[in-house]
Image 1 (tube, helix red, strand yellow):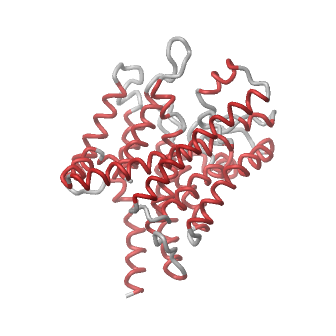
Image 2 (cartoon, rainbow, N blue to C red):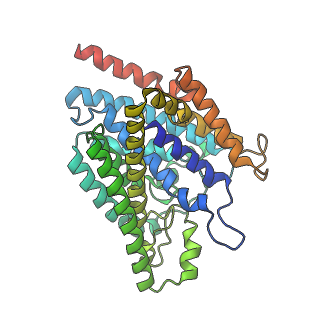
Image 3 (cartoon, one colour):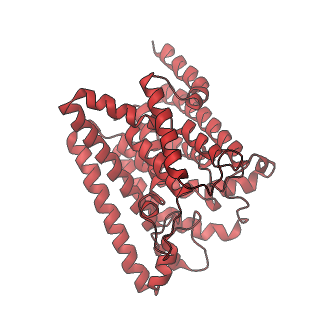
Length: 368
């Protein structure tokens, strides 16, 4: 899990820092690999984390679930507030944390479901939610900012519309990722067969979705030049003037094909990480500890993501400076490895977890 989170963090840094296009207009390798997929991986892993704290294979029930839901809600609001504060900075980054907090809140009603129901619901949501969004968005005000900002609290209706439907990471559509992660987290992830199924199944879904989108968009009349232009990504959703926009598989388009392709990619990455780390543990336990340190940034992604956003301000680090990506990567990997080596929790993770941890401890005392 931590290795996968680290890869998601590095992928998002790449999409923020590296030029997405080659001089000839083609996508760069990093943009092709990480664009849309890194943030989707974050959202899927959020769902897996929810499942792991909510009973793993057996969902929590009754008062235990209620207290856990309260703890998650407090944490979600704290994460959302950090996102609003980061949105005040002039970085050019569409900050994900406020959407991330809303996504946690949307996932609370589904904590009682088991793996099969969650996985089927994730597929259904990936297909239906973009269609509903396409119908609803023409009635909503346009998005004002790339990132939700603290001063938008003065207009809560518009802010809610951005967070759910018109923003860069629309939580209503992205709930498909969280449901997928919840379903995956309800599986027995220690079994090698499950890990292989995740990797192979994710690969199949990603490839088939991409191929089907290609066939459908060409049948709808999209030219190769138009598809290349859209391959760089949209801004959270497609326009609503044509229904065939929903056939795209472009990053951040939140179409059915996009949600299925990026969700499959996330399952592939997680399954592969579980297989590789498990293999390392089997041949050399010390290698597993070394991997934990090298990819330690995955244990404190909220802190390091926030640091990355701050580093992108002109006062800290000019955006046009050559070699920025490598230096950002070195900074987050070094800090993450130090914290893991010292067995410390990230600063923001500690702060955000204070009240939720008290709520959960109260639950354990009540059970005792």
